[in-house]
Image (cartoon, rainbow, N blue to C red):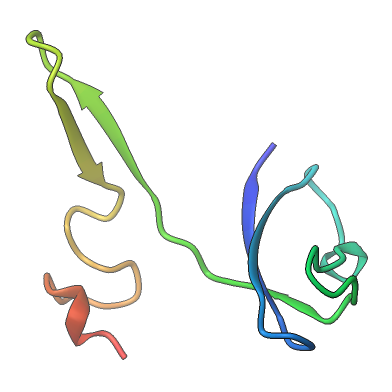
Length: 78
């Protein structure tokens, strides 16, 4: 099941929720205030592999760039 990030418009809380595919966002209640005034946030992810010595190497999913732009420096995204 996918993990989604949400923002509650009612209280400003950011939270994560594991949901079944097809879950309607308005059915998700904020764990802080209990209201259903949430927006799903756009999330980025990375994955990791271990080399033969056991060191973890994280690999960005978008080849080092943000998914929404061509910059290699994410601090430039607004």
